[in-house]
Amino acid sequence: MQKVLGENYFIDLDAIEKYLDMTEINPINVSGETEAKINLIKFELVKLLLEVVLSEDIEIDDKLGMKGSSSNTSVPFKLAFNSLLNKKLINFY
Image (cartoon, rainbow, N blue to C red):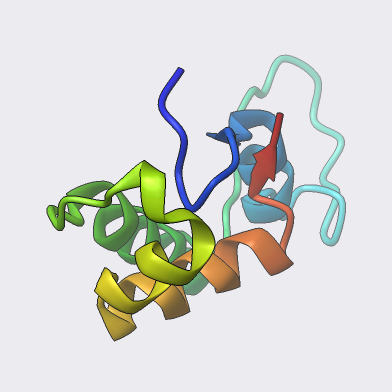
């Protein structure tokens, strides 16, 4: 497992699914229907934030620790990572 910013983080796919799910807000009980309803705005934002986090290509020196690695990351990466971490869509191991 690769360390990111000094910790082992993972993307919680179940948390993302619950975060995007809108069926609890507007439940329609029709038997045999398996339609999923998601919030489109949240979906696009989570998709964009994950794309920014996963496409960061700056080499981070693990020997420098948190101080050295935090100055090398871009502002979009920091915002995306912190936003996903705040919503508990990214968790540490």
